[in-house]
Amino acid sequence: MNYLAVDTASESLKVLVCFDGKYGYFQCDDFTAASVRLMPEVDALLRRMGAKVSDMDMFACVTGPGSFTGIRIGMATVKALAYVCEKPTVGVTALELLAYNCKGKDPVVAVSDASNGMRYVAVYDGKMRTLLPPKTLSAEELKDFLAEIEEPYALVADSRTADEINAFCPKDTEKAFAALVEAHEGEAVSGNELQPLYIRKPQAERDLEKKNDTSGK
Image (cartoon, rainbow, N blue to C red; front, side, top):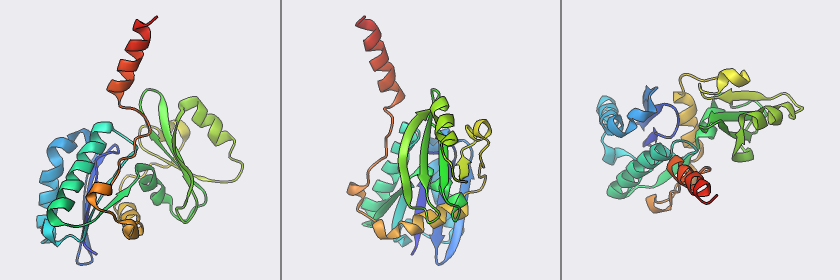
């Protein structure tokens, strides 16, 4: 199975290509560069692998949770490529990607920053089956949540939250990304069916609601 996978929703931009059983990978720690660097990096990686977009059997992307703009960039890119090439798509989550770096440990708690003092959290078992789907907790609620887990668990987080909860923070996620995408290969859908995972409303919408609430007082 040849595929192209992108992650523009997490804290780092990632591009993964699997072609003829070989893997090519690019990671940039500034996800805000996605709008400028995504397609040039996709093109460069495909060239390096000796592949073309039309060689791909499917396209995959991280659908969230994460940056609203970042999610849209990845989704729009994958949907467009899938439409042009008439190939299916696969959606995976940012918290799954974190958890796959601890695959085999049971359970795995994955945490990432959700801005404004909030955290995204999800829990998976050793086979990466979802025990607790992605949700948001405040930083204090997260500490209470972790304290209530009685059994030993693996804790993995992005760099923005890892230190505060003493969690493992993966630096190179190539193998985890490939394993995750390939695990969901059987769930491929058309580009039109691919859906984003928005847990929180966009910041602009939250700001507007706050402003309206204040104005109404």
